[in-house]
Structures are given as C-alpha cells and as structure tokens.
Image 1 (cartoon, rainbow, N blue to C red):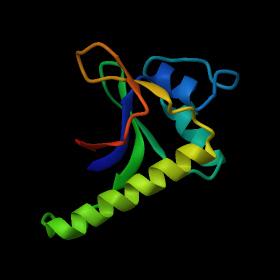
Image 2: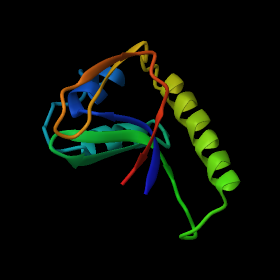
Image 3: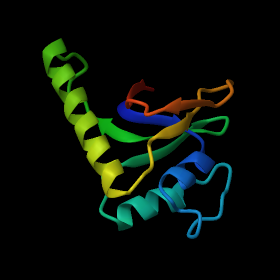
Image 4: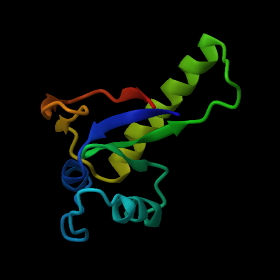
Length: 119
C-alpha cells in the first residue's frame, strides 16, 4: 500500500488534529482517531505501523501490480492535493510537525510537504 501523508505518533496526530479534548491517548489504539476522522467525513486514513509510529494520510490504491510511471505520479499528486485539502478542513496546524520514523527520534519539521509512504 502507498500513502501520501505524514509518519507521526498518536500524540502528534491528536495535537495536529486538535483532538486532545475528545481522545484519551492510548499508545496502540488508533480507532478513536480514525473514527473521529470518519465522523467528520474525512477521507484521511490513520493507521498504526509499529513501535509507536503511525501513518496519517491518503491511501493510493493500485489496481494492478504494475503501473506506468506517469499514471502513478498523477495519482500521487492527486493524493497530495486531497491530503492538503483534508488537513485544511481539519484545521490542522502544519506549520511545524513532529515526524517520526521507526526506531528514530522525532524530528520537528517546519512546513513539511506530505511524504510518499510505502508499506
């Protein structure tokens, strides 16, 4: 699966989406955040990966195991637009975001562009 978005912790998702009043932090349980996004009609997907790291992003579904590069690039750019539009609807403050990679320290990134994430 390919996503366009951010690799973050649950705490950072709660902060970014301003859900602190609504969700109690649970290190592994992404369901309250995903439900909150769904209740708001958002197409953003929130998924736990491993070791406290999650993906907040827009999934790109590839129907075939092989795809022309130009088609894939178009899908990625469309997903980027959807991600940025959805984050704006969620009133997320993306001026500084703590991005996380598995087994690495969080890094504060100013005005980050969405990433392409493959699992």
